[in-house]
Amino acid sequence: MKVSNNELRRFSKQIILKNVGIAGQKKIFSAKVLVVGIGGLGCPLILYLANSGVGNIGIVDHDKVDITNLNRQVLFSSKDIGKFKAKQAEKIIKSINKKINVFVYKEKINKKNIESILNKFDIICDGTDNFKTRYLINDYCLKNKKILISAAINKFDGQIFKFDFKKKTPCFRCFMPEIPNMEDNCDTEGIISTLAGIAGTIQANEVIKSILSVKDNLLGKILIFNSLKAEFRKVKLPKNPDCIKECTKK
Ligand SMILES: [Zn+2]
Image 1 (spheres, rainbow, N blue to C red):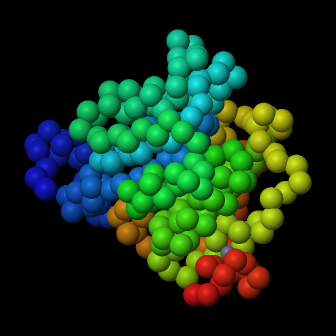
Image 2: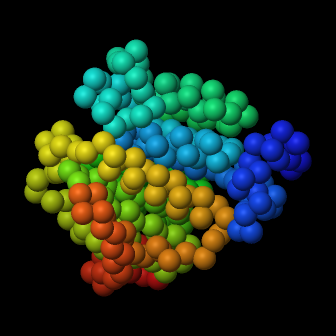
Image 3: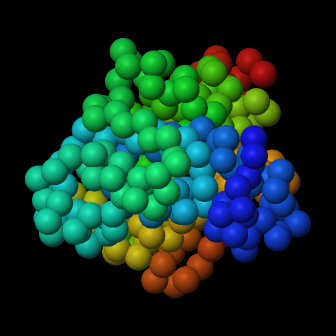
């Protein structure tokens, strides 16, 4: 892969980093990253992936932009209300860098389509708002040895999980074996806009680190933070011996 002079200049501030270099930037250009859910998390995540030069970005969302999204879904503005999020996101990615290959899935992930959508990507980012989809994505990534970078946000609290199923890591089910009785999401509980920005940006940071194979200290851990107290904590996530068999067999 040849890096043009224009690209050398465009990405010069990261290419000069020891952990990146031209070899690292080429890895970023050829990376295949899927973002499931273009909400509060997906919006900043997509922006940073596109600006960093990630060459292949998949986006999954079946929803249209609603006025209540606009406090935190920073890819959209008033004129986008009623339009499909995935189509708008594609336009923005292309306006940042037309060389990026964008794969648009205007649908909801389910048991039938998950294989055909996720199999084209190496790194899967989960920013969905329901546990059913989270379990589905977890199980697929576990079975197919993908890297899964998940985030969840609620009120002022955020959590980031990172699993590399090529290695012996716990999975999302180890942390939450059953769907909680009350689904907490921002429809019912509320959310501060900046929290979504922080969590989505941390997801993007973890994606870039995975692409560059930077030695990882978030693998198998949860990063928990509270935006009111400005507190970050990293907690080790133990493997649950009673988890599903795909998780415990390794
Ligand atoms: Zn597990």
